[in-house]
Image (cartoon, rainbow, N blue to C red; front, side, top):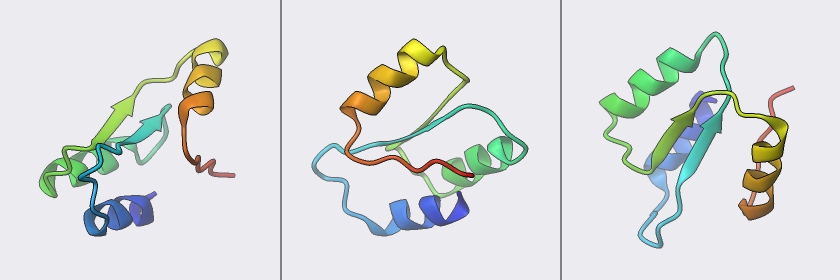
Length: 68
């Protein structure tokens, strides 16, 4: 997921695109801290959501990354 943040730093998000991290995990707090240090305003971290809400997010997404 650090690579995702690295990509966000290099991409022009002038069109309003944003990046959502959904869920929880052992590196979540580190990723939040990194995004804050880098001033990434277009990155949002959400707590785990019910499956019905995940489906809605996926339907609106242009792409998804699912760690295995």
